[in-house]
Structures are given as structure tokens and as C-alpha cells.
Length: 233
Image (cartoon, rainbow, N blue to C red; front, side, top):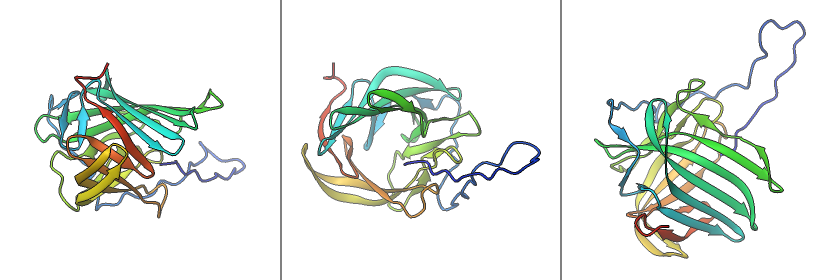
């Protein structure tokens, strides 16, 4: 979701740094504290709705727009945890517009998958144009969030990104039995989430996850194909 910035007023003779944009208050109905033990989080694994296995890839399309998500054979240590790097490459009409490297880890106890941040490269006319939305757990007060529980419960509400004023996405599981038609096939028993952020009040986005596959629909983006980790090159 796009970060919303409010202008700051310049005040003559202001002592100290100028105030930044106000940070919306956290909604206490969303879980944002996740207790994990030392060594519990690892970079490889899967639950029914999310796969962290190197080589696994998903391709989505929406008209002339394309999104490719690839679980890389690469890890990164973030906030003392070894995380799996998942790359997203998004293009519009054949032109690259964004590449992000997301950092995830899975709990060996609960099978929940936690989100530790992302590096973001935005592009315009083939050239780097910014890094909006980038954040890392352990930096500037940011903490890891939950991207997908190991056990999906209807009505569960959780914070996915905890980087105040930068990335504050949160999700609610609103259905566990959706039927979704995509170019990759007709899928049943899908999980549906409603995503919001206090940075964009009133904006809602919906994602659908198929068991054994993961994300299959994100707004207008629909799954075209997926490649199993063992078969990927």
C-alpha cells in the first residue's frame, strides 16, 4: 500500500528537528505482539497457504501488467533471525516498475510465517526512482509482523508490517471457503483476507490463497502459473 505523507509546516526559530507526519494510532483489535522462542524461526518450510521453499515461483497477470514472485535460494539475517528472501518483480506493459526483496521466516512450532521487512527498488523509464515502503525489523523501531498464521481461523486479525509511519499493513481472515477462477484453473477452499492500513484510512484490498499453492489473486492480479520448488530451474 502507498505511504501517505502529510506536509510539515516550517516554523521560524524552531528548536530541534521539524515534526514529521503524525503516525496513526494502532488498532488494538489486531494482534501485533508475537511471542517466539530463540531458534524457533527458520528460513525454509511451508504452511497450507504460504510456501518458503527455494525455487517456488508464482506468475500473475492483469491485462498488460505482470507480477512474478520467486522464493530465492538466498537468506538474509534480519534482527538476528535468518530469513528467506522472496523476490517480487512487477511490470506494466512490459516495463519494469518495481523489484522488492521480502524477508520471511517460519515458526517450527506454529507454522506461522513472519514478515521481517523488505528492500524496495522503484523504476521509471528503466531507471531507479525511489525506495518507498522499504523497512527492516530491528531498525528505527520496526518489528516483525505475521504474514500468514499456521492455523487459519475465521475472523483472525493480525498486523503484517510494524514500521510506524512507513509500512503498517494488517489483515483479517474473512473467509475460508472461497471459490476462485484464475487463468491457472478453478480453485476451491480458498482463504480470503481483507487488508487495510491506518496510513490509508478507508482503503481495503482483498487477497485469496489456495491450499497447497499460496497467493492466487491480489486485487486484479490473477495467478497464471506456478512452478514447484523441485521443478524450478
